[in-house]
Amino acid sequence: MIDDPIIPSDEAAWYCVRTKTKREHVAARSLAQLDGVQSFCPRLRYRKATRRGKIWWVEAMFPGYIFAFFSRLERERDVVHSHGVMKLLKFGDYIPEIPTTFVAELIQEIEKQGEGDDDMITLQPTVKEGDEVEVAHGALEGFHGKVVEVLPAAERVKILVEFLGNRQVVETDLFSLILPNKPIPE
Image (cartoon, rainbow, N blue to C red; front, side):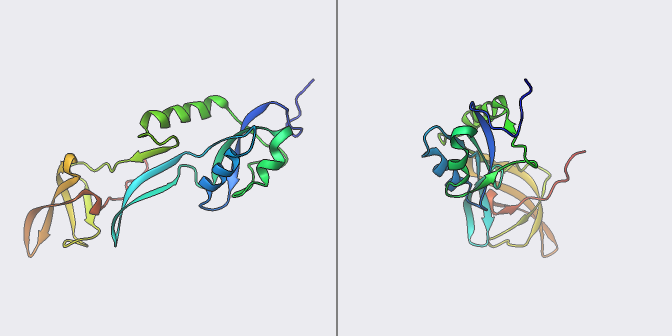
């Protein structure tokens, strides 16, 4: 007998769930409260330079999507009508299952790189000597320069800037920099 992908199986599997905008964590928490449903919402945490200074920013690794493990036959209706959920990802009438190995490897990688948070990776800025940068805030706001030294322990960098016709090396906060947009390698 050939499996019909439109008819739900009674076996639990991982599915991709479409969430409301910026509500991935709400949907994941809502799904986790359902019996027989496991949710996974991988998130990224990073420092971001703003006009108000540096702040920690958290966003979904896959904006608008989370993963849920459940039996479609038993729980599809509950999942789709949960708080923060829009629908299951589908192509026409076909709702694909996400391979268990993919989700397991993603969970394992996040646990390996995470710092105690079960679904979050903290990203650190990667600036290296020679990078062209712009200062986002502080006394040197708007200045462009080249990184000459990275001081990771102090979260500071030394950059070469041109000021009043002279080139000066100045030290500034790592998180006050706007990093250049690097082209995607082909």
